[in-house]
Image 1 (cartoon, rainbow, N blue to C red):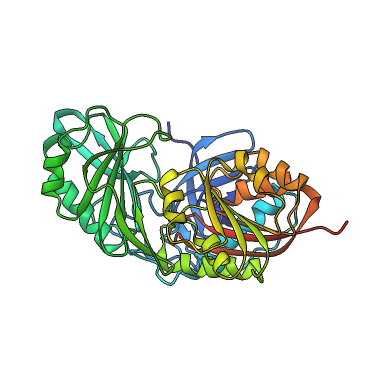
Image 2: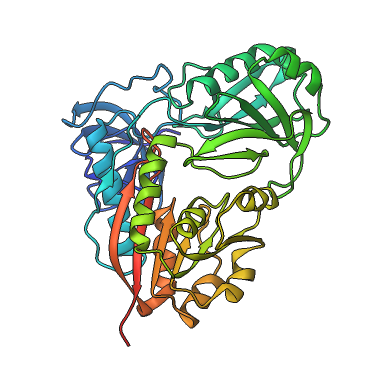
Length: 428
C-alpha cells in the first residue's frame, strides 16, 4: 500500500546513489533519481525506525545540478544511478561518499577528496553484465534491474550508453541470435550474461547460472562479434567451462599484450584506468632497490612496471590464468605466485611497499593482521568500495597514517567510485 507524500529537500547523495534528505520527524530518507538541492514531493514506500525510502512524485524545485539524462532507458533502468546529475556534480557526490565513509566507518575525519574525472563518460565499459529472465509463453527480458523495483528487469538493448561500441554491437547481435525463449543459451529461469571486449574489438560471453549448455556452437555461428562462449553453471567461485570458440583472446593493456581467458580481471574503463595506474606507481615512489608486494596482482600491471624500474616484486593472485599471463615475458625481479592473499602474504613479507587491489568485498581479516604484525614502510590501497576500504583502514589501526587520498571515476553515471589511499608506517 502506498504511503503518505512529504516534501523533502535533498541534501546529498548516499553511497548507493540515492538522494538523501530528512523527514519532519528527523528520519533519514533515501530517494532514487534525486539531486542535491532538489525540493521534491516524495511518497514514502518503506519506513523503518531510523530511516525511510521514498519515490519522487514531483520535483517542486529542481537542483541546478540536475540534467536531462541522455540515455533512452534512464526513466526506470537501474544501471546508472547518477545519470540525471551533471558530470561535475557526479564527481563531487563521489568525493563526499569517500570522505563520509572514512569519517563514519573508519573514525578518520576526512574532507571529500579530489575525484579525477574519466576522459570518457559514455560507452566506456569493456565489461558489462546483464540479467536475462525467462517468463511464460517464451517471453524473455534481458537488461538491468529496475531502479524503483529491483524484482523487475528492464529490457535493455545496445542503445545503452555504458558498453564500448564493440560490446554494444555484440549485445544486439546476441539478443537477435539467441532464438525463441533464448533456447540457444543455457537453460534456466534466470541467467547472468557478461560480455567482455578487448581493445582489438573481440568479445567474450560468460553465462552464469542455468543447467544444460544450450546450443553454443549454433549460437557462436549466429553472433559474428563473439569469439567464445563460457558457462559457469554453479557457484560463481567455480571455474567457467568453455562451450564454444577460442580458449584465449588477445588483449593489450599498459603497453603489454596478454592472452587472457574468461576470468582474468582488468578494469572496465580503459582511459580512466590508465590515469589510476599511473597515479599508483607515482605513490609507490622510487622503485630502485625496493622490495614490493603486488597483492591481488591480476596480470601484474603494477608489479611488472615496478620490477622494470628496479624493484624486486612478488605478485599474489588466485586466478591461475592471470598468474601465467603475469609471468610471461615479465622482467627480472618480478614473480607472480598463485594463491589467496591471506594465505601467501606472510611469506612475501617483510616488504618496503605493499600494493593492495582487492575485489569489492575488501581484505580478508587476516590481511590487515599480517600487515600490522610486519608493517611495510608504505601501503598503496586501491579500492572499488569506500565502505570496505574504511573498514579495512580501521582494522589496520594506528600503525599507519594516511598521506594521500584520491578518487578516480572509473564508473561515470553510476554510484561506484575507485579510491586510492596511500599509507605510511607511523613513527615508533
